[in-house]
Length: 285
Image (cartoon, rainbow, N blue to C red; front, side):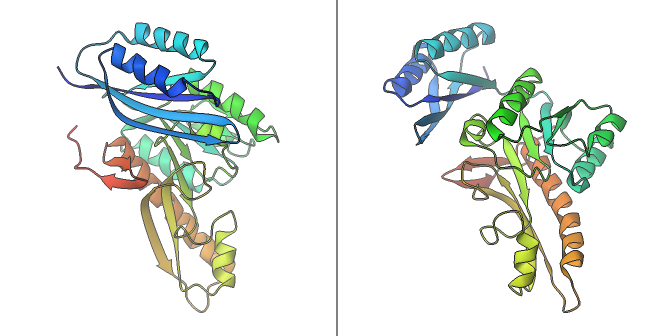
């Protein structure tokens, strides 16, 4: 029988016995722990655990049992059962349309090995694009990020999302959100990271006299713009370039680079370990 992989994320107030409780649960279900990573920030505990099984498991029973364990340990747990079915995608946006349009165009031509299930925006600017493509659009305009994320999490859970794409989503996700989807949130940043972090990368590049400007697609971690790098691209700056011309060139490159990273993820070409992205052979359809 083919190996079955289950990804488990645990979030809650830091306390003793949590790691042992969940690892023992896997062993009791005759599973093998392939990866485990844990972190604590300001009393908030997060753990990612990847387990594999060589025997068939009842998904509903497994999830019910692990939820009971989480309740006993006063933690919140989410499970993600990997499958060969088309991945479900959530796209998070603010007001810039270029990255969203590039992904939607690729999807409309059948070039994306996934289904765009929902678009979530911090404002209504891009809602008309969602309506034209008949993709559900939800607004999360709460100024307090934890409140906005609470709504986003409920939407993402409702649509059973496999991959979250930040298509110029201009807010910083908290550890409480990021830890739930390790290796499943992709962002595009307008610079060759780790240089020029933050929102004003093109302005910084112009002011510092950069001769080459680039973009970076990366997985999101709790450290701003520091996640494992998937793919980068760059262009030269000429003596006649302005901030606006650099921005136009950069936006075109952002869209194409983000799309490439998303495609690579959906095609199973990427694997993250020891803080780096490693490329695997392309899977056959």
